[in-house]
Length: 233
Image (cartoon, rainbow, N blue to C red; front, side):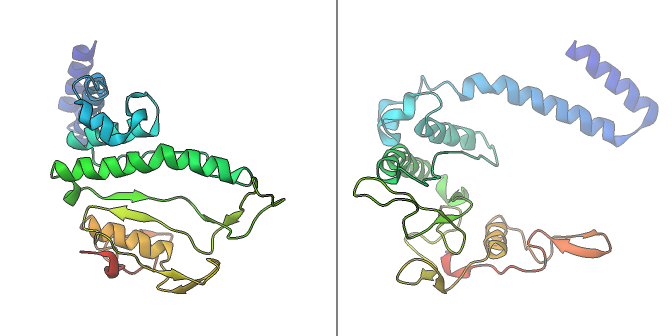
């Protein structure tokens, strides 16, 4: 079936000389290679025991965050250029004391293991790792406050993102909040600044990458954004 499909595409290209047809053929072939590579990529049987220990006890549990981190390294080894991992359940309007400990146990060792694994393979310097969410949490309790149960609300004024590898200065921090963690008091980073910095680490000048839409020029950081050089090597 695939051979016949290829022949039909080739006949159409020869009849029209439309380069978009060749592009479509290449897309089909890439999709096929991606699908056929999945069983090998997801097969962890040949991973040594010390690697599972590095990522933590959940690293051999399909679907667990630690297993996803290990899979991310295997994808990066095979030149996958963008990998996104999700870990839900951080919306703690209540039940924070118990939930946050559980989630940290699931993520802390796995994230550290991923960084160490990439570093020992010589891959960290050209792999950018970003960890973040869409907002922070309030520094005050939401709802009833008891010794064992309370929550925190959404807080967009200030929050933390951490990064590693890919040109990030190790052990550095940037930005400062007030004593209560409510407002930014030094070195704020706007979302456009964040995007400009990520693009810079990818070798892209955010001020030159522009496109025209409805009569004016835009860029990926709109008409704003500056590279945060204080966190770069």
